[in-house]
Image 1 (cartoon, one colour):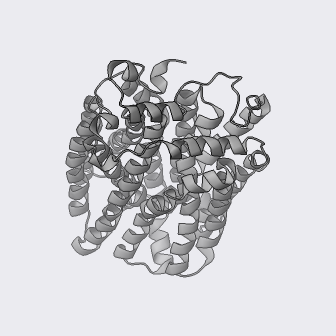
Image 2 (tube, rainbow, N blue to C red):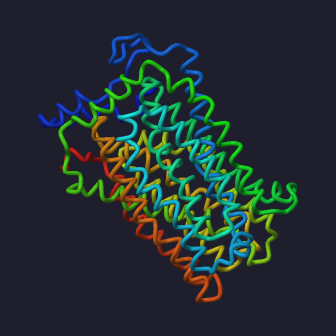
Image 3 (tube, rainbow, N blue to C red):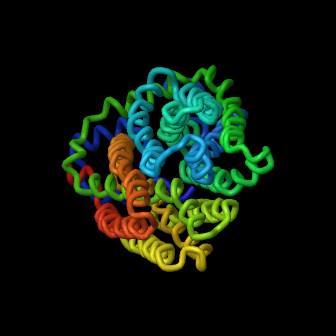
Length: 441
């Protein structure tokens, strides 16, 4: 496997390491492990059937990490009418995902150390299935929000632990397996956006059935993890996590690169959740049918399927990722300009451009892996950038809902979305510079 799929090969050769960094590097699991490597418990590597089962589990889990959000975006108008929500309250609803990701994602590493990552992901899939079954039928806005939070809690912990599982079971195929589950994640996002409205019509036109049916996919994702919960390598997974936890701590808040990554991650997440929550409504208000609006959102989300492979590989070959950041943000600016001036006339073009802009997500994940020399540093940087980033993204969808309700149209909300592309570009350029957090801390 080429080295550029994981860490840049020249990092440790070109920069001297402090004793703390050297200790962290030695204690982390960044070095490629052979296929027959011993685990921490001294046993041989995983059996082939275990690896196949983990791969199936990764794909099914990734497919479930966004439908709870994009299916709601496709039926947001029906849900608002059915639960008598105001535009501001609907904005609160679209802000719940990043809030849950920030709050519950922090719990994931500790839960994984105690119970093992497979057990936690299995429980996450159960939580998603339960939340999706419950939320359409509770009959109140508060109950709908609570059930959505349950599903999003399962998404949050699973989302954080996916890279941990890849590193644990596929240490010599991190790039390819990350690409596999990234593609599945984008596919699930697009699929839910595209078929929720037609599926709702086929189920008798009930938005409750259209939302609840996605629990079936989550229930299917529970199955591969059940035998893995009994895998004798749980101690090895916990030992690996403990190694990361025992590495000398970096004062990561002193790093400009870490803050740049956090802001870039937060602003791209803001754009993504605004798109997932509000884009179908923008098109519907412009005269596009509900079904077509869902497909347009699916086009935006589906751009992540091929680009999840392309962008990380290109970025890993570049010392500075700033040019990619500028290109993605420029696509976003043109897309928002199109939504402002001709939302229906050029709908397909705007959906395509905004889909390219949304691929800042895999770029952010790639830069997280490139901005530290050690595995322990990557873990800490990932936790800081994602938790801080999701906190930054919370007000965006809510503010869009408030502006939409009080301005009576989409002019101001779209102007806000376009304006946020400018600081996203600045933060991305800062994060894309060829340096590591160890240099700055």
